[in-house]
Image 1 (cartoon, rainbow, N blue to C red):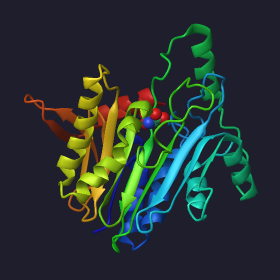
Image 2: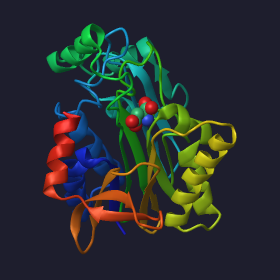
Image 3: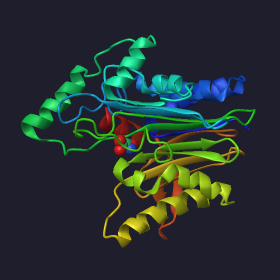
Amino acid sequence: MARCIATWLMAEQGVRKAHELLINGHASAEALLKIIQEVENDERFVSVARGGLPNRDGYVQLDGAFMDGNDLRFGAVMAMEDIASPIAVAYKLKDRDANNILAGIGAKEYALKNGFEEVNNLTDKAKKRYLEKTENDPLKAYDGHDTVGAIVIDDSGHMTVGTSTSGLFYKDNGRIGDSPLIGSGFYADSEVGGAAATGMGEDIAKGCLSYRIVELLREGFNINKATKTAVDELVGRLERSGIKARDISVIALDRFGNYAAYSNITDFTFCIDDDEKGVRVLRLGFDENGDQVYSEADEAFKRSWLENES
Ligand code: ASP
């Protein structure tokens, strides 16, 4: 059964468009690119692509990845500057036999050679945010980061996964997070399922979280149990070393189209196309027993989230 899921409220429009593509018989990768590029192209969203969060030196360095669950091919770009769509470059890189992960100047050179346009990703708004930080320090370094991550399965059972982000605000020059790291920020195997993560990359990477979720599915865990177990396991492991895990949120889809999300924070949102209820934005919270529950994000919540994000 065709289905798509994506992180955060910012993916809503993309998921709506991808849903239309899927019901009209389009392939998984096409729908996946649609979701992520809708976010990349929307300058309201300050944590992805053009207009993304600048690093400590005032550069917008972007990370992104694409993986094909049928043949496990993948491509990734890290700390890439001056190119508008990390997901499109990552998608192109996955077709190579080697050199599938490119960083920094190498990623930019590859993109330019392959017809991608050079753009200035430091928009006026992004520059203002950076200057405010350096002059008045009103924003905490690393605040406000988010990744658009998406997983799609089409009618033929073909799964794809992708991510795109500017990573942490005010990060060090050259820093990369989990989002372009295969197994940490994303993983998909059409024989089993797929997963993607968002949150503090340095913590997500410690548990190779997306791969762990897919492997739990392979072992027979259901989708809810796989996401919860993987996140709780990692949080617990860090705790045993005296480390308090920072934000960790995941989405996952199994090969039958069952979905789940799990997070150690409240108010993580994700978008899902549901057969009966259409495209929905769901918000995670916890009930009185500490168990995680989903609720529909209402218009007031959406408005305040979008104001915060942009
Ligand atoms: N995981 C991303 C990073 O660490 C940021 C995020 O998803 O919030 O770069």
